[in-house]
Image (tube, rainbow, N blue to C red; front, side, top):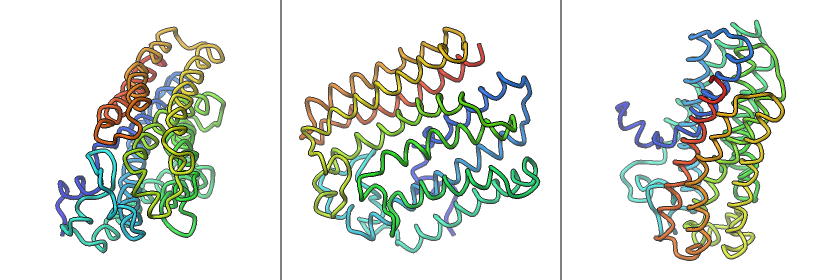
Length: 302
């Protein structure tokens, strides 16, 4: 048996802001539209997303280890480089695999309840869940291995931005509109940057393991500019909120919350070939996603 504390450590629970923020923002958008709030539906979506995220984290560590990407990494840190527990032999791959499937089963259980409550069976919630599972599980798992083929960023944008925002909004409103798509793209691009900057310390080990991420394909010299492109895209989609949907101007304070990532982008520009010095940029990128998501959520409700 694994204790809950150990499970959360192995599944890298500190990164859960990437899945919690989309649910909070999607719920806020839905409340703005309907002025109603269903606590049970909210917690089913939240826990479903959290367990799905924990499962994805475990799957990524398990399959990266199985495919030799983590064993070669000389620059592992708290944000990137894979599981130290597997590489150092403190945990077995089998335990990671079992916890992974347990997480997915718990997430699926939340989804099944929502399917019955909202769709009375097969409906949009099932398709959202399937699309989210494909985006997360096959991020590293064969045969698709999206990140190994240079498509990781696209599926992070989908799985941790667009899909959870639209899905959360649908659960609370019963409708699918442009609002959660725009907001989800903004949040998703910020989450994409978390995974993207983490690929720079992993450049050598990913390349040697045949993991053709965008950073490996482009080389760190050229790849560093994409970080700012993703950041600019997030800023654009934040601006579109008040322009298209008449959100309060407070919503635009989300642009101020992007400042830590501007600093992170400068760190990446200067130290793209010096992994130990990228730690500050990695931390600031996580802070940006969390701070911006909170500000946007409050901005929708003001």
